[in-house]
Length: 304
Image (cartoon, rainbow, N blue to C red; front, side, top):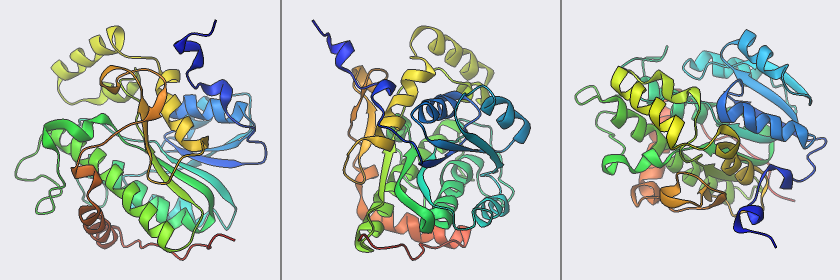
């Protein structure tokens, strides 16, 4: 008799993706690598969009499917433009905005933005809009339950948190921005008559190397313990992303684990805070993001 565990969606239920192309940012490690592995096993060609080409090639070589490696530094908008310019009109079925940084000491991107907001949100915002004319199916952006931390809001008066910076607060703001970006992207796609869908996902508490970059030694030690005793592995952590990337879900859906506090379990549709569901804030964030990146929503093909 099948158990609830057996019934849960897993990577063996991916559809045949032969002939489809996916770009995965941060594909060289963690859930990015695990998701890429599952996609290639299902037949997709996966482009590793990574900051370090050597690490990307080493990681790609561990997979048996079709891959290629291209350089992308999300903390440098010139690198984002170079990646997009090199795409040269090739159809792109799936864009997975997976890469991210977490709870760093106060730092700046090459363009002068707070590192977590600049990398996790602005870099992916620019990349998505520059590649969007070529996307044929969907955009999946990886957020986090951290968007709930401390009643997170978008600090429009101080996006870089210069007057009140904490690694935790900056990370929460960036993950909230991911959800608002998805909400407004879907609204614009629908208004344009496009069949492309924008979705978001979060991995729950997954043991990856993301947590190892926290600025505080105490935070790193706490996360090591959490990874050992509480977290699910990166394969389970990748399932919400894979589900959002391939299941027949409405645009603007948010996928996460179905277990207690969404920390672990099989992928399912999950809720978000009121702050992450506010269409007016989403529009305002989009406008500000266009101003900061100098990248705007492009003309996209309407659905036939």
